[in-house]
Length: 116
Length: 114
Image (tube, rainbow over all chains, first blue to last red; front, side, top):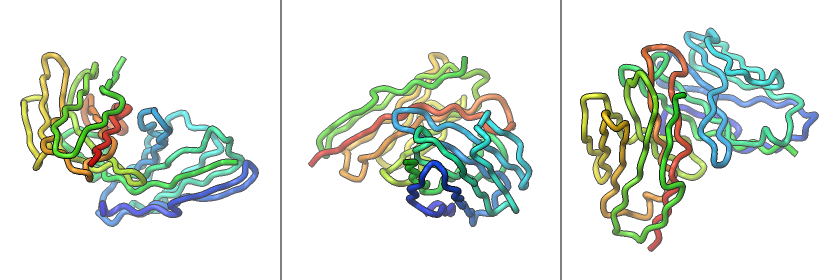
């Protein structure tokens, strides 16, 4: 295990539902990330938090709303999603921001989201 | 434009055989390159990281190479095992120290057959 957990592992929701994804890291890291992984596409960075402050929103639609109450927990609130939002949503954490200096991101197992 | 291209897109080999995965990048300024392994239904896990001055680095049966002049990297898997079946993702870090400065490749899906 990587020290990053995500729940639920699978989620099926209708376009009018509201749901939340949860991520928790047990590594003492300061930075946390949300990524979207679609088939045959590179990982897409969605949001970045550092010391629970949002530092990047990569032009993500407002139907995705992140929340970071502390450095160990990260949520992604979902509402009125579209079928094209179906994907694997990955959470990651790292000791510091970015990839310089060998800073490694540790990924959770992901939440497989299906929007009907 | 910063890009990372991986080839082949997918690969099928027999157990026990060797294989090599390729990663070409046009990222500048270059900081480091990391290879991740992603098993089905799991998140990516780092295999190795290469910095500008490193040419070769091994992790068990995995050997990564880096040619910073041609901006190419390869991941060589020796004596493949069924558990090597996974997607392998090349990730290049650029710039220095800011958030989200990682460029991800699309990955190579490797299937090892008995």
